[in-house]
Length: 259
Image (cartoon, rainbow, N blue to C red; front, side, top):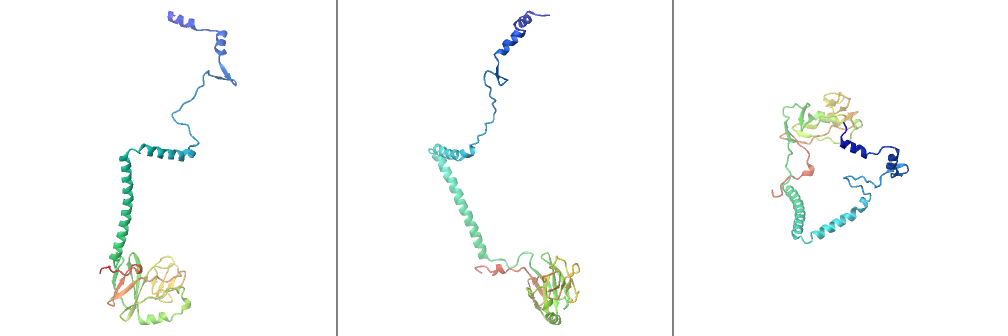
């Protein structure tokens, strides 16, 4: 059923070729493409990029400082706060540097402690028979303590130097009654294996892993190792107490300034 409103709507519509022509005759074409009478621009919320920003940065920064200075020129409270903050940072740095220097100076006057923690060890070798070897652990490192008789020392000194592979280090023995005590590392200088004592042509140590041979002084006589067994800093007290500690030559003397 068609109402009056519907008739009025259809009456306003124009149908036919003439009406279609009238609608298109006023349309604009640009290179065969229909365009609107008014130009349209697409707007976005993002500001388009400025490829000259890197050139204008210094100018903008200088302008910002100038504007900020002019803006705060009459604000004496703000300027006073800024001066106080800068002075606090400056003098705080000076106090920190003075504190570090004072701590170092006082520590130097106090001297160094005689023994480092966990690096001092006393071992009683009174029960170790002459000519025997004992193995201990000091500071996490296996260590050999060998008690040499006079005959063994004489025999070792008569060995030819031609078979020594490492002639740079000297042997250090500590007197213990009628014997001498050698304290050296128990790690082979080749790959860190633990040599076995009383073996080899020199009855010293032999690394059964790779074949390195050491005499009773810990001097390497056959490779593949090329260095002697490292000596451990030690001393003898009361002829039977072996005192082992780290070497602290750069720290000596270990005396307080006022002592």
